[in-house]
Length: 339
Ligand code: XMP
Figure 1 (cartoon, rainbow, N blue to C red):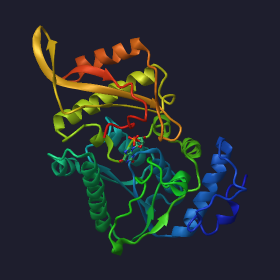
Figure 2 (tube, rainbow, N blue to C red; figure 1 turned 60 degrees about the vertical axis):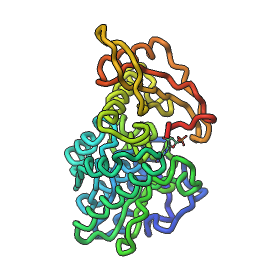
Figure 3 (cartoon, helix red, strand yellow; figure 1 turned 30 degrees about the vertical axis):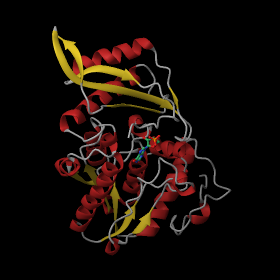
Figure 4 (cartoon, protein in one colour; figure 1 turned 45 degrees about the vertical axis):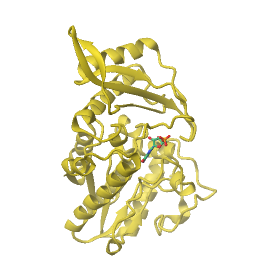
């Protein structure tokens, strides 16, 4: 069996924030198995018979950490999945199905949809929306943590780029902001891995391809794609149009090839015609970009037939939408998200 991070196995990864020069790039199933075996031992040595808490969003990093810890400590891991109402279509259901039903995780599912949407009602400023979502997330997570007895550790899906630089895709891994009396010791089994390695490990742990290959999704979720003050009606326009876009990208073989693609819905209506009658409904904006590091981005040159098909589906299947636009703006001058 290969040795991956040999010298840190005994004490776990705690305290080790530097990837050893000797560490191999994990790019095969065999190396992933060796890494998993090593981390299972390290985590067992670190937490012993104590309980570990994990905020499980369903993103690649937290999902891989969850699957790894389930293998290492089983029911000593308590996963908390907070549904803030800003997740993509089918995501909360998939998290419950895979982790609770298939992997047997000790999973607490929190339906906090009304709570988040009530807090966000009438708030249009993007950074204020982010702040509300971030703070409310911590409060919900804290409340759930207080209901549990004997938690001593907090697991996090920190990955190596999070340690190396504080780039724009960072920060959402950290459930920092918990009150001082909840000063848990951290368990971060993938913190020396790059994203592609985390995916290889996830695959070896048996996670489904669509979870392991997921495109980046911001912590505030659809909240920054339902532009301006969020309403339930427009939030559904974002969720449903995004689901159609993802389905058609999958069908066209673009999923996993285009770096990030999604829809956004502005807070204004325009005039159109539906069934020979004047309509007054929302537009949906499609964004599909490629980038290496999210600092600069180019747009994907989508096929017109695909754009027409997606437009046809969105305008006929998503209520309250009468137009579809394709955003041709690179970053800069646009950002990837609209807010
Ligand atoms: P921008 O819009 O800044 O996006 O060009 C760069 C990358 O970061 C993601 N993003 C976020 N991720 N919380 C996150 O976790 C956020 O508030 C946030 N805002 C943007 C964005 O999806 C893109 O991948």
